[in-house]
Picture 1 (tube, rainbow over the protein chains, first blue to last red):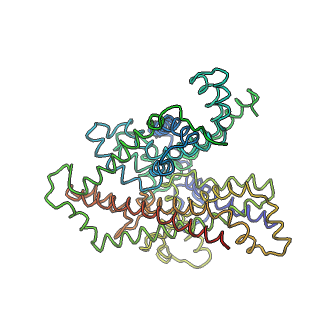
Picture 2 (cartoon, each protein chain N blue to C red):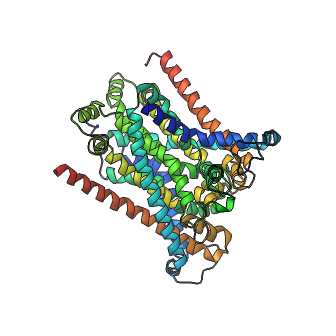
Picture 3 (cartoon, rainbow over the protein chains, first blue to last red):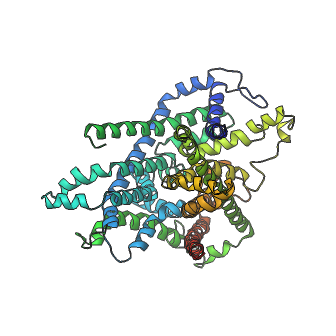
Length: 261
Length: 292
């Protein structure tokens, strides 16, 4: 009985705000002190449909720069993670700590400097600039995941393949990357979520010229009409949840087909 | 499992894919912030000594803003870590089927910070959901009767948003640690007559201590320097440091740029100092525990 009650409590706290969002989406005129959303009408949904073009454009841009951020952080971190996991060298602990700093210290400090830099380089208000700054901010999550991944796999596979005459590329493509998929997915999921949820950095470096879902969402959240903010918040959840489910299914299917699990 | 002693490539080459962006963007961005705070490389000619901007930070208004930032970060992080640890333990103790179904706790974590801020607005504003419930309980007659949770001047709205988003973060970390702990430990403690609370504090908590320290550092510094939630829920006069910086940078004239940058540099240095001091303190506590 007590476990069930506790579970009900967790589910309620996690999901009830979303129920309220649904209420606002269905009943835009819902106000104090009604507990039941009323009057129900399709105004908010109709408005959303009329805005389908801009919504899709901003959502697409957000998905695109978040995926590119995942890809770029992967490229940044693959070789360093291998080195940290496999080799001893002087200053290793200090360097590892330093390289994790961008995720800990306030992002505003370096990004305001980067903003000035990008203005001079012509990267301000550009898509590339947004991906670069998001990658700088979020690569530590990828680095941690990949180091842990390399440590979990161990060096034996590599040594074995090397003894059998596999060259660098063969080892990378046939051995290391497949074995690292779980850690890449783990790190990539966090990086994607961080990039996709970020408002300030995109707003600063994108300067309104780069479309983003958070930038599109913000004015609605700050407005007095809550129905559109509620609808877009629900819409926001669909992308990461859908992506995680898709990756989960795809990865497990590939693994099953290759008989790895 | 010993690492290979002979690196196949020099360290610098292997690390270069990451060192290049780290040095160029992270350290470069920092260097520019420091330079601008001292009056160099500004878009306008600057008439002042190199430390004038730092002297301006002693303004009582900015000091109050720093106090608010520290207070909000401390309360939010403490609360999130404490509640998250207890919930992680409770979820770990659930029967198998419920334990798997408990993944719904991750929902607030997936929501972007601005959406969590919005949820807090919808629930806690004077005419929000909580206020409506109060009306039906006969506690609130008009929206004006509802205590001003959001704009009371002590950052309560921001604390609520941070805690709602960050408790699941602590649960994930704590739960991952507990998954590697044998449930027999708890059973044994209970069989030996330890109560529920005693079991948690003396048997489970030592396993969680390390990850709690890590989570506290991450959450405290995030809450201290983040912008999204304060910008949506922010109280003005004074606001959080990040919002004050934003106002100086974007909403006032360019002569304020060095002051904004000096604030950012101080926030950065404070964060570094906090990490170093906190890790020292935590490891000392751990060593003392071991001697007992």
